[in-house]
Length: 631
Image (cartoon, rainbow, N blue to C red; front, side, top):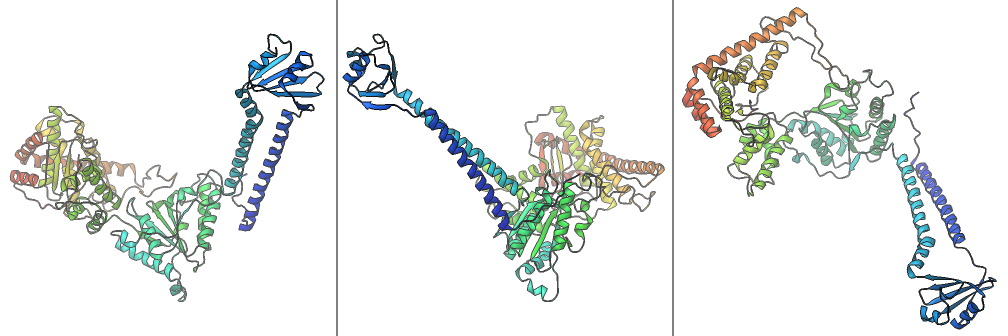
């Protein structure tokens, strides 16, 4: 039978009294052990029942000669003592040295009695054995008791929260670039924390829970800190995984302790990062009813529902997996306000880059707007990393300012990895790579719906032997059928260029073919872009929560439809192949010219690339920012 997760709630005074009792008990045991060791030490040294009498050296020698002595002890050649046979007394005398004792005929060779010579080392050992060694033993006992007391104290605090508390958070909304809509949503929370009476007097209840939803690196944690900083209230922060332990009930106990501490310091903010670590949907059959994660989640639900509207405690949480959260977390009264923290637009990317560039020496040739145009789809954390990489590269080259060339290299490092000039290709491989990348570039430049080509290189980046980089004219949220078809043709440009020029194919297009297949299948099954199969989706794409992941796709169509889907996907890919091959044959001189330039220079970009493509194809494309490279 599983142990109950509940534990008695003791007042602070009672808990303090129990802790004092534990310390007093340990101290009592320590004193008992100390007394016993002292008694044993004194008993081992023993107490002499004989009388010690100080005599001259001649009197001591006379007693030896008369046979009244059983043992003579010489200490450091300056002091001599003699034990009498009748144990009536011990004679002690002072001498000038060992020679003086020999003058009286008292030597080991001449005397029949036992003569013992002791040095300073013998005295030290005696002192060490009788005094210092018991002290060492006592110290060991002390540390054992201290560790025991520490273990008892840790046991008392095992169910305490691990939340980190910040009384004065210095982060403000001005430190969070972009996210204007998210900040506007959270201004009400700030106002409530500053002046709750303004709302409560009118009978209004401010949302108790705010869920920040968005991709990783978009600034959810920073935004929560900014709310606390703007309101000037304490900020309790922890990761959801810090609640969970191997023992059932510990997480629930930590949740209770966290909310108790928050209530004592209200108004305040509780921030739980990565809420999906404990907030996943219950009832999945994994772990049973006594699963520690579910117990912790249940306690969070109870605590949030138990808060009164005037407590002044707001619970904020962040997740990038809202689809797996338990519905009970999202109902009114708990996390009833959802704030979307999305990837920044181009304008917001400019603000983010300007914020992170404040403390960096940026050269005059660097355009923040150009960097923003080249980085669609990147989170603020990625943009910060780009400028940080640029600063590192500048320092590595002993530069004083971050130049445009270094920023371009930093963008490439973040998106596709650093250049790998150490990967040396044979001439045959260099030629195949040049033809492959030139094929991507020519098709991408000629077709109407593809983004303008920004850079082509046959220098290895990451796992790719070369790259072709395109740049969109603007941020795109919708993709048309025409754009999909042209992008598929561009992806096939590398493989078909090899086939057209060399008459053979290589493995270099494996990633391109995977992307082509994925896009074509989604066009048919998700976007309804197949005329034959009609305007519907195929396959249930919602995730089944099992250990947090989907274990299989649930098919809602027959085997006959599956064959039609495969056939439609093949038709889409075939049409893209024909369009690509037709383009390459028509603009073969441009393909050869770009290939020769890549073999000679290895890289071509910017204005030089646009002029070469325009002059050889006769087509001019408008050129604004950057996108994901095609390898």
